[in-house]
Length: 274
Image 1 (cartoon, rainbow, N blue to C red):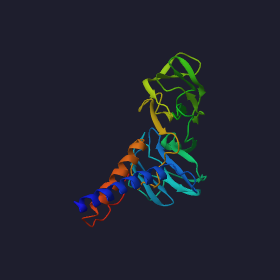
Image 2: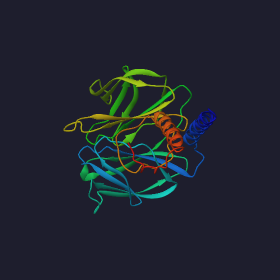
Image 3: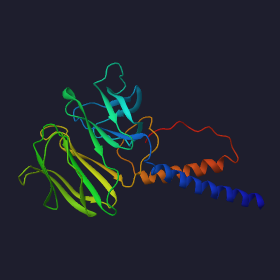
Image 4: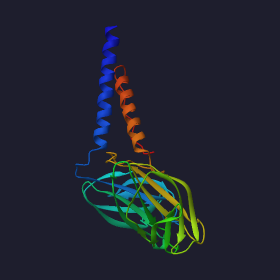
């Protein structure tokens, strides 16, 4: 019975420590690091691998894929994009300079023949209870566009390649339309788009207006209040993740490993991104 109580006490302590630790690093923005995510927004480019300073951080990313945020030290970094599995000659290589405590979206844009890296600085906090939303025009052959919410113009005259500033809106479920600027001609519909409070949304219009793949969107949704990961994923893409769910899962994993360690020796498996 004493042993059982001791184990329960230790497990409770581990749970408190785990939740505290996960929450602490999620909100630690007072660091010398920056956060960078990578988006494949080139409609005719094949799957790609991405390296940062020679290290592979993304493998097999297809069109419309987006990483979670990767943590990088502030300063300059060499970013190179290769055809998936072929690292002899990069399709494009650039120097990325990032500032401490800042967050960035780096999008591979335009056609494969004119591939470019478009760097967008991200906000990480909203007004309490409000949603912040912005729109990026990353379709290389689309004209200037307006974006409407429920028929009202939210963003006007967005052109390639640009990303608007954030607009603050009440939480809502809105029918968003992308229209040819100054007209009623809808080129892309996004019905029932949910905009939650304390979230930041980046809606990227991608693809071709005339050709395959047709116009589509990448929606990046990020929780407010500095919810950032603390490690660079090794490989992989697959859209934005629910960061809060990730932190809860990480906390439960720590609990399980810690309790299991009372009985077994184990070797921690290599980290893999989702």
